[in-house]
Length: 326
Ligand code: TXA
Ligand code: MG
Image (cartoon, rainbow, N blue to C red):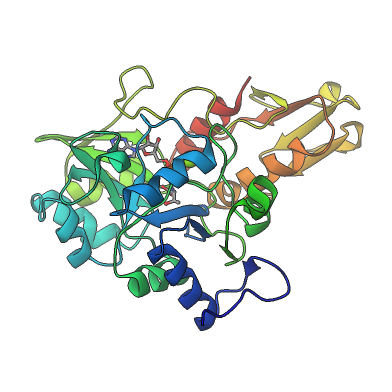
């Protein structure tokens, strides 16, 4: 008999018993939500096309937008991609895995629905004990996009996932707030350079110093990543990015998202959040999506968001803020 989720419903602490239940549900072709170090994922066994189809349906995600495949180990990566692809990839993997780096590699034994028919699969080994324990129990790769409906902000807590999907998901493993708060960096390797398709916690500088290669940020128009449309990551409330939020911007219909502690009393806004009082980009990234979720629910008619410095993970923060603008 399968153990049952506790009385708190289907949001459960990841005990050994609940991990076992999660793994069994996955192996039976169900989707479940689980934490990673970046954001919560909505997972299905990657080798089960019908289970993967449920993920697309739940998210209302177009089938042309491929999913990231999560692996437990390099040996699992080697069963589902051409591995080792080359020396640079091996170096990047040994430096950044487990971690928030997703690499596009030629696929093996991965159904087409996962990659939207593309010959390459996006893979990573997540650095979260719950995600890793789950992958080890299932002993198969897990395809998992962020656990939000298509076009909505990514979830950084189990409550966000519950808010979006209610009981449409059988089980949500609650690992608390995610550490990084932003989705992984996605890269593709070329013979003499690396392309960043989506900026994330692993910065261009980090990739450059480990690979010794030039790193290029690909602009939206050039990118081959289909799911990176402008409206991605958008709160429902309209949002504008400004270089600095000033006292005269305050309105009772506006919410403000400050980067650092403001040098004025922001009570004139209907709601406000400060990404990092001390101005730490890493802390700001970790708070970004949760604060956007909160301001989105504050009843404001619009959100003003303050720009951050575009360096390191600040690049990824600005990338998400610009996509949230509408
Ligand atoms: O941090 C993350 O990456 C989180 C956690 C759950 O791992 N996952 C995540 O997945 O952000 P998702 O599906 O929300 O974003 C994946 C992005 C999409 O923009 C998709 O288009 C792109 O990766 N992608 C996936 N497979 C691809 C492929 N084979 N070729 C090109 N782009 C791909
Ligand atoms: Mg997503």
